[in-house]
Length: 313
Image (tube, rainbow, N blue to C red):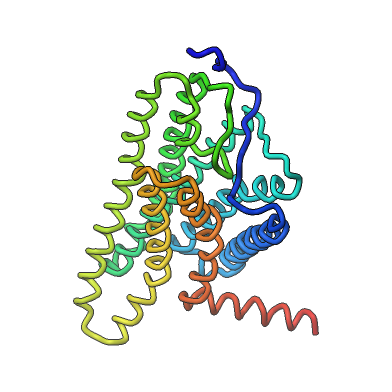
């Protein structure tokens, strides 16, 4: 170990986004607006599902948990980034950095697994409509949700425990706007081969396999849709999974962009832009996609507005 190394650091410094000082105020206001839009949009989805009995079905049960996860996912990184821009204090305590990394991995993994579960739900609804309520019973829904949380906790906790065993260089500057696992490993002066092995193994379990599951589910769903004889039935089937397919496409696109920007050794700026899309833009757009492309959500939103107007009058 070199003299400038140390086994434990008290804090890290987050360099943040490559923004000029005179533009910090404008960008911090923009990111704050995006964060508030994410919170309000997803809370609106939760409210609509809670108040409308017609939405008390498995599809919207999983959607409500996806909305809650998106709010939590944004909360992990965006507020800290905005505060750093405003105060010009880029430091984050060691414990806070480890905690931020843990919750980032946790909610990102849950997001991924929930999309797989929702893809399976749409497959059952379209391919086996007569047996939908029998297959997607409450017990199975709770099992799938609990399994998503359990796998995500195990994955995030394994990375966190292994990272906590590492030693770091005294030069503890993270060229990112949050405590990214890959960036932290680059700062370590310890052997990170075990960490990289766990990243590869866990990545296969919580990224590659879920993505394969989504593709298989929608492949089977597409085959079932093509067998629908009537145009009305075809339109209904497409409408049923259109919003979820849009979210999956957006999520997978940003995930793959982040993965390739990291693995190909591109610049930190490219990595941060991909991360920003993944952590801020995608959770913000999800409520709009589900509201604009989903007839049930549009009807529930209309009922809510009409009820409020009657109450005001």
